[in-house]
Length: 351
Image (tube, rainbow, N blue to C red; front, side, top):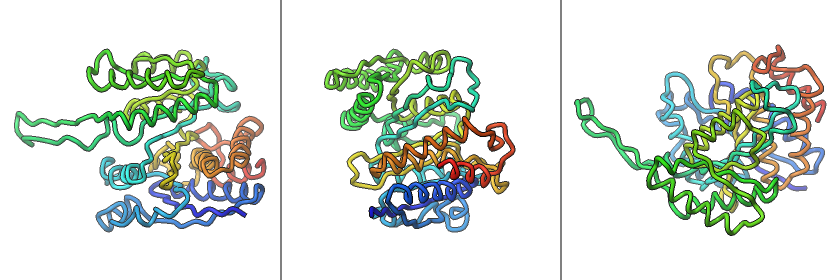
């Protein structure tokens, strides 16, 4: 029987509430499909930062290195600046483990009303592929003349041929396995160096994937088309910043950011990949037992798919679809009054 060792980082806020349901669903799928998982939990969080001055210990990556995957709840809490929590935990893991592909599936489920009339269940089903370790979120830059009238801040965007090419190849490969359509997000009419370079590499890689029909859209027009015609998209590939923004917009189009999953992938599997819901720590509802666990559960399904258990992952996404389409069990963010526990029990029943 296949066994996997999973690192759990519940993190902050509702992260501690949504990981246990995801863990239960993984174990139930494993019992059905013939694999087991063991878990090691880490208390790396803003609470740890307040207590010890660091989100995780200095040897944190070494502690994770031998795990098969990482399942993360959420990071961020009032009192700790967002850039401290993010750069103290998520970004070091993503970059230290070369998780250069961020995958965010977007789907309008039956039973979840989109704010858009054009977003119809069964028609809106696409994936945003985001470059995850360079681009606009580089560490190169700094501040000068702090506190003076001529104070300035410089942030350098970094686009390398290797970094862009590898994420494009992943996106084109994914499109080839789906509906063979790819859209590249750009802004090469206004950003004069990095985005024309991005466009050139898209054209190069597109020529190597002739089965995929591709086009490109400027980010401002693309954001509008996500709202006006979301069903037209299959795979959307974007730089770090553009992918970050587009995937949250797309989750809102699908009806709730509370159900959106994400995978931070090292496709070569030299290091563990990390899976996390998009929704954040939601401190306003933390501790009330009403957090929506679907984002974490769907992220766990992505994890199982990555670990080679496609049928188990498909069962979980089918159970997600069933609980939304066939029952009225809903957490408050979806218009219901069910608790996290009640929602989880219904999903496990359908699974």
